[in-house]
Amino acid sequence: MTRWERTSEAIDAVARATSADVVVHTYWAAFEEVTYAHLLDAAIDGVGYDLVTAPEASAEVAAEYGTPGSVALGVVDGQNTRVESPDLLRERVEWFEDRLPGAVDLDTVYVTSNTELFHLPVNRFEEKLAALGAATKPEATA
Image (cartoon, rainbow, N blue to C red; front, side, top):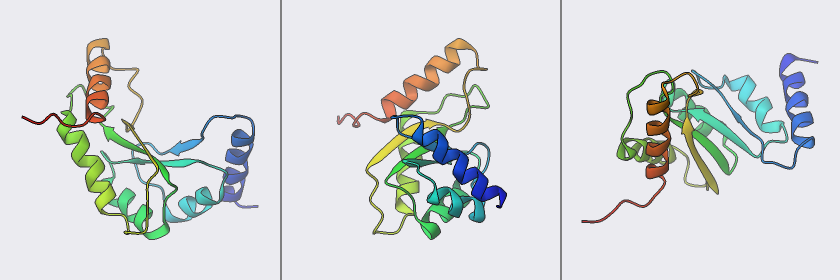
């Protein structure tokens, strides 16, 4: 059994052990093609993509091999204290969606950070979460 098959079986075991949605997210990179193909065979509800560190590679693998209807898009940079604007976060989501084939219909889009945020100062952690929240609300019209 290959490491990818073992990984797929391990993810299946986690998915069977919970009633929660299982979304597998990468950090600091895009999934390699072989890993991604095996991941899609696992009993997952969604895939996460790092659109800060590896936007092009993430979009390419999703466009070429398909993606589940639920995605987690890492649009906030968890490695620095600069707080992105909600508009920039929306642009990253739209950019990703524009690169998917027309037949792909995303049911659920989770916007998140590309890495964990716990190591940031509390004020930056909270500001990044607030930016994510604001990015999910419809833009106000003037």
